[in-house]
View 1: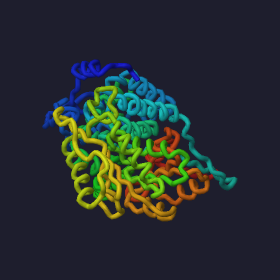
View 2: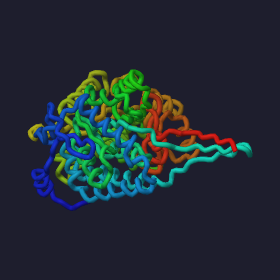
View 3: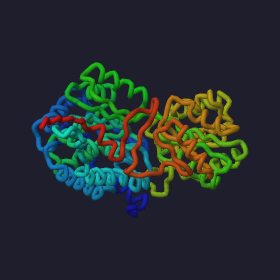
View 4: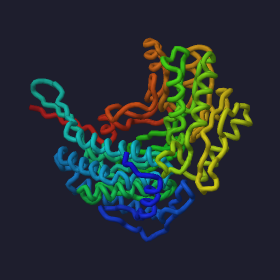
Amino acid sequence: MLELTHDEWLSRAKELDLSGFHHIDGADEPGGGPTYAAVSPRDGHVLAQVADGGVAEVDAAVAAARRAFDAGPWPRLAPADRGRALLRLADLLEERRDRLALTVSLEMGKPITDAYDIELRAAVNTFRFYGQLADKLTDESPHTAPDALALVTREPAGVVGAVVPWNFPLTIASWKVAPALAAGCTVVLKPSENSPLSALQLGRLATEAGLPPGVLNVVTGDGPTAGRAIGLHPDVDVLAFTGSTAVGRHFLHYAADSNLKRVWLELGGKSPNIILPDAPDLEKAAATAAWGIFFNQGEMCTAPSRLLVHPSVAERVTEAIVRRAGELRVGDPLDPATEMGALVGEAHLGRVLDHIGTGTSEGARLRTGGTRTLSDTGGSFLLPTVFDEVHPGMRLAREEIFGPVLSVLTFDDLDEAVALANATEYGLAAGLWTSDLSTAHQVSRALKAGTVWVNCYEEGDLTVPFGGMKQSGNGRDKSAHAVEKYTELKTTWIQL
């Protein structure tokens, strides 16, 4: 990581030039309409006045993307040339890494160390991966009758609307934008209203990297207005969304009410993390469980928020997690020593505290945390929180909290563990800790989740796909499979 002290990051934050224009057709556009304040959850201060885009701004961005797709050079470039442009963008992201990390930390509360080492590393690596992949996607020529030639070609799907959340504003934007661009599509990106500034910088860097005007457009605004306009727009061919299941349903309705655009959804999660008595290293399992739920302030759809542990080791594991929660340094996101920063804002903090209050009233036992902290800073900070004696019917065990709140449940045998793990409307991720190879395979197959981690959690790289089952969504980000979402298959049959 770039070695800067707390004071040096503070100094850079004061010098940071954050502006809130849309980025449309290769240029910043002020929009001329209403604005809203982007407020830092670090201290409640206003970072910038951001353009509050609506139907007119979305229309302009989609029109630019449509022109760039229908008549511009981007879809017609050799794939290797598109790849080189994405690699230039990756280089610029690397070059501006400290500025972008600082922006992310300020706008959504992530510790600066995580923003620099994890968020920006992921964004850079994503554009490099798809830049290198662009000219390695192949068409097919199936064997047919001797008097015919069949070709199956993969063509860019058109204009992509990408609507992304605030918890990983550049990582998840990159997961949508990079494969869509590699495929030859053009993109209208709408970031969360809580984290618009890093996405605007991404749009500007794309133009600086040489992407033609209209290839990547960024429109800021809220979901009910700008997001809805993208979902309903008849010139958007594909919609990629990461966010809540409730909003995902809206996008499916928007598609049905407009042009039946394809909608790819990565939605919520209530991920189970199963620790069996034969786990190879209980201390590691407990430390990983603590890291998984407290990393990024628990604001992760894959967070292992339900710890399912056998009674014979439950207290040992829970006590280790409680001890780690007490050791975590909660503090200023701009302090490199901070391990847990601020939740994204006061409204979200209030929702998490409401879940905590309900957990207590329903009879779960609060082992640690449960209250806000550092109130004098003006920021939205919460102590890492652990409940045990949680039962499957409790709200703590059923609903996605999206905060640093762990629920500990116990099970008597493997069948009950799998049943508890699958007793959720979600199916995004799961964890399993065991020394038995057969158990690892059998339970992994039985778990209804898009990703299962065995004796680890949140591991992987860009070569493997990511996405969910059930009400956690459809389609996959990451890997070569992500390109499938942004392409159409065409069959050409030539009679010889």
